[in-house]
Structures are given as structure tokens and as C-alpha cells.
Length: 314
Image 1 (cartoon, rainbow, N blue to C red):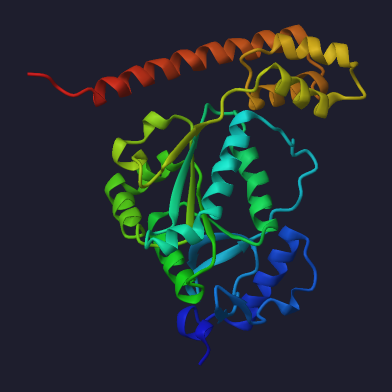
Image 2: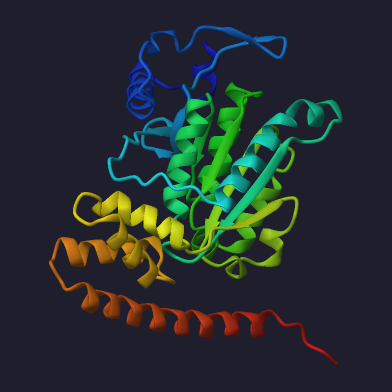
């Protein structure tokens, strides 16, 4: 019985699905050679997973297994660049470069990066771009929304590929911990602390929504904020959306009028003005009013959270 049979008991049908989805995601042909043994770190092993994005979930027939996810190139995906994104990429590259030094010193090679920022700041858009880059570099990425499935899938993956680089993405980690309970999440992360060659990437709208136990160093060593787009990013986004219909000067003026807008707000502005044909001034006033109300509600919630975290004196 093969190693795949011993761990996943995956059928050839499932393997073929992995092939097809990986090709859809990466655009790579010639997948027939996926399971050819190749040397790595002085050992012979098989890469059972093609580079790609997989959803860590429970399968109906095969038990726990990462299911391939196809992410086709989106025509409207805005390729934005900012200092925070460059910092995150720098941290990622530094982590992979330090792999051999960590193993040499007997230190578990793992890290966590918590990306936080207000809704519409581009966290999901950024993740899609970085996942594609990681896959293009030959890495496997797991998308998880359950501590249990995360643990089981990582353990299964490691039993098949003990040395392979793995990236685990937890979107909206605050919602995951609320749904399953903080203690369960902590126990799951604690059970993975000795795992090697793993990078955890989590996103949240507000870092203070996470307890100190979750966001402490050792679990998430880097906390990087993706803030609202500045004037330059707003101009580039609007230019991407409405070039050919507005002059550069007109786009620059709109970008100036949208200070404090998120990418989501800019998307709403584009839709209301250029799809629904609402006057620009009316649309701007409506969105700004919604932003003011949202900021007031967020401030109130933040004050309440800080009051609850404040230690008692006496």
C-alpha cells in the first residue's frame, strides 16, 4: 500500500481533481509529472501536492483532506503597492531565507503574521495577490476556517510531506475564535508549535478583537497594519476603474475628494456613479455619511473593549 493510501486513502479520482484545480489556479501545464520523485535536502521524496491553494476541510468519503481551490485570474483585481505590503513581503522572504539556520540550531521553523486594518483596506485583495505569488514560487497554501480541520489537515500533510514549505491562511481570525471558542483555538495552535516550515497568516479588522494570548509573540511574531489607501493609491485605483472615461486631472480631483475612503468605499463610488448614474456629489455625500456613522460605532465598540481589558486596581 502506498504512502498516500496509508494516510489519506485518496482515490485516483481525487488526485485528478487536485491536478485539474491546480492547473486552473496556476496556469501550469504538464501536470502529469506531479508525482515524480525528486531530491530535496539530501532525501528522496514525492511531492504529493502540486503548488496551489487548498481548503482545509472535511470530505464526505475521504475523511480529513485539503480540497483544491481554483482561483482564476480576476480581470478587475487591482495590483496595488504600498509600504505595508512591501513590509509583509519582506518578512515572508526573510522567514524562508532563515529556514536552514533555524533547522541547524534545532529551532522549530515557524512564524505567524497578523495583518490588520479597517474593512475595505485591501486585506483580501492583498491575500489573493500574495497567494498567487507563493504558489508561483512552488509553495502549498491552506485556507482554514476551523481549528479542528486546520490541525487534522496539517498533520495529514506533514505525514506525507514532512519537509515541504506550508502557508496557512486564517481570514477573519477573530470570527473563527468567536465561533469555535478561544480555548479550542489556543489548544490547536499550541499543538502545532513544534511543526516546522509553516507560516501562519491571519487577518482581522481590529487587532484588539484578539486576546493577548492569541496575538502574543510565538504565535504571531509580526503585526502589520494595512491602513486606508492614501491619495496616491486612491488615484491608481480610480484610474484602474475609470480610465478612458475621465481625464487624469478629473481622476486626481476625485481622489482628493475621497480622503478617508476605503477600497470598498471607492468601489461603491464607482458603482453608484458610473453604473447607476448617480451624481458624483450626491454619491460622495452619501458614502461620507455612512463612513461617519461607521467610525462612531467602531470607536464606541473599541472603548468598550479597552474597558473590559483594563486590569482592576486595588
